[in-house]
Image (cartoon, rainbow, N blue to C red; front, side, top):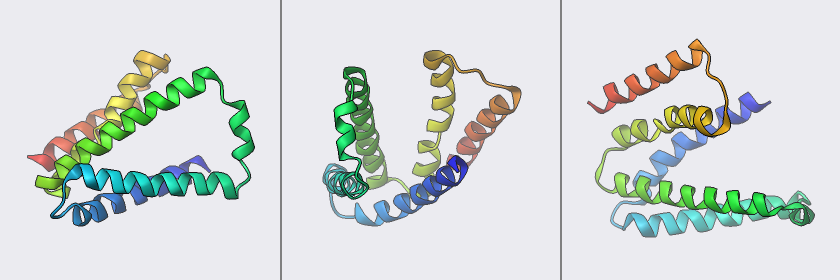
Length: 137
């Protein structure tokens, strides 16, 4: 099931790029990020409320909170820079560079989580990086 969720994530990320490029036209990337973040906030809490998961907040540990806050900060910064890039860049150039996050995730997963990469994964990362480079140049 995780593969379906990952594919849906990629599909909606693609839609996000196109919709965001149109949405940022004529306004600052910061305002666009704030509007988008407000919608995400409402959507996420709505899902938690309607699925009955609000009671799980009691289970949050200090470690959960620290790392979720740090993740939220990283997400916010990512979105701010993404919208700044969309303000002046073509979405067809911005999105491939943004997808280099996959390569960074692979590197960080090894460095910080102790995960291992097989040859397939390394080749895939190289191809992703090369593809982004080709698309941008």
